[in-house]
Amino acid sequence: MKYRQQLADAASERNTIVTIGVFDGVHRGHCYLLGELLKLSPPDHDAAVVTFINHPASIINPDFKVSFLTSTSEKIQLLKDQGVQVIVPLDFSKSLSEVTARDFAQMLTDLLNMKGLVLGPDCAIGKNREGDAKLLQTLGREMGFWVKTVTPFTDDGRTIRSRVIRESLSNGDISQANSLLGRQFLLSGKVVHGDKRGRELGFPTANLSINSDLLLPGDGIFATWAHINGKRYMSATSIGIRPTFGLSERLVEAYILDFSGDLYGQNIELNFVERIRGQEAFTDIESLIYQVNEDVSNTRAILNAAKGADID
Image 1 (cartoon, helix red, strand yellow):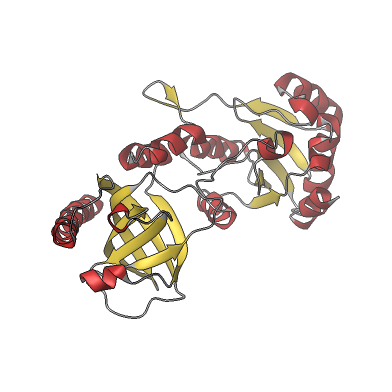
Image 2: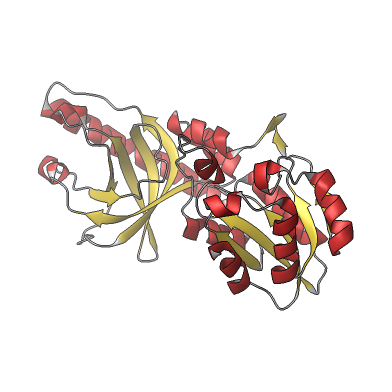
């Protein structure tokens, strides 16, 4: 089975303390759980995360659709940044969904040398989510691993969940999403050719191709940081269909301030700082140009203030 090979390929020579989950966004709640994982991992053990490339719910329920906060590669890097030593991305398949909690725990024990299992408050493993904390504790006594359930991390009394962050982003509430993430929301994409309307208006934009399974913030204009070839630039980013031109394709376009050069084919990372305004339809081009100038001025002000906060 592919999942068994993926576990074997990531196997550590040392004993491991393991946690399991989708970890989409690697938000503050996840980071709290990972912090507990690291605290509970002895110096001679590796902290290990078993995560999923696709969402398990999409296999169990074909009607379930989710847009991810992070790509798999970004998620892996964020997990590494937290200090996790062993990361196992699994393809969640129909066959994996049929594996019992006992068999899955046995695989973790055999292939990852698991000696401890740290569970988030909602974690359950195995077919039909049968492997709750009580069953896993029973299996642990038999197989030689301990089980610890971590209490949920809350913000103003509310449990931080990836679903809540997705809702915030879909509503264009970048400030709340960033607060729950514990960092600025990131979108990454390759610059592709567009219709060059921005260039004709005097504001050449980088048209980004974004993976279709990633979540886009709600339509509007955003103050963003653009990372290009290791350098950071101020940028005003538009997400939407450009109603002034009667278009219907949803695009991500970034106007990079104080930049000149050819970006086609390059990868750009955008950190979202603040939403400036919603998407609007303008009656004439002059009104649109006036508003874009206002957007650029507002972007400078917002990002200069953010840069000052970074220094503080």
